[in-house]
Length: 299
Image 1 (cartoon, rainbow, N blue to C red):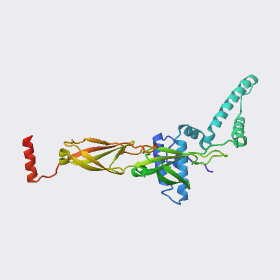
Image 2: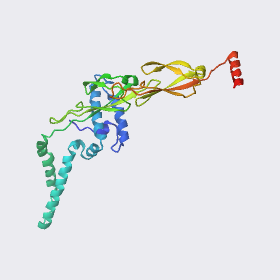
Image 3: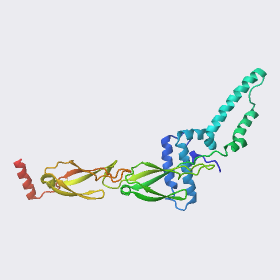
Image 4: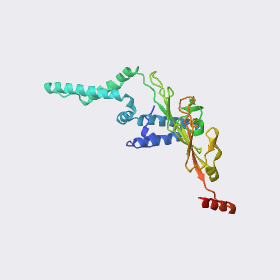
């Protein structure tokens, strides 16, 4: 397989920051996501490469090895160990050479040493080493209403359909890990995992904070002054409220258990907070104006 330049895949320079890597990955992942490119083999390959690039470059330790060893970064620990052994042996030979009139490895011996470690000799020794597959990263956009209840979805990752149940109450930016659904391992090693980051789009008039919901509700002046009943929309239905006389603007009422489901806590919900916005009349007829003037005199 030809060497893949992970920086080039993400359109980055080698000195890119962590934030730049994350931004570039999201952009490329959206561009080549299988859901947006059905039956497009080229996009499928690109999507896999983008995930591989992000997996390596977003991990500081992996990135350091990749920058130093390139396509052989997975064997970075073995390279480092071999370099240390070489330095030790070189130092030992140089010490003996100083006593006997010669100096350590020549250029040919240095090359032979690494060839024996990473050439045929290394491949024989490493053939039985099992390497875990790479983790794959994906993003999934859902509407807020979609995560009010458990949601069943089928995701296509690298041409494979993955069925999953998304628990109710999942939050924006949350990442879940699906074991064994990442890249294939090498030499019989285990598969990597699939990491899904959720983007929750809120197109409702509710504001969400964890499991609690917040909603502004208009209250006309007359009901605010005199009190009465008011039906308000909750996230999954309606609720009838008793309005106290002389309710002030920005008065808050808590509806216990009418908020959002708590993640992985069955039958547990947060609360809904209603904030009343008292509405002034926009027009008054002559009779209404006269009544308000009379009220003013009583005050």
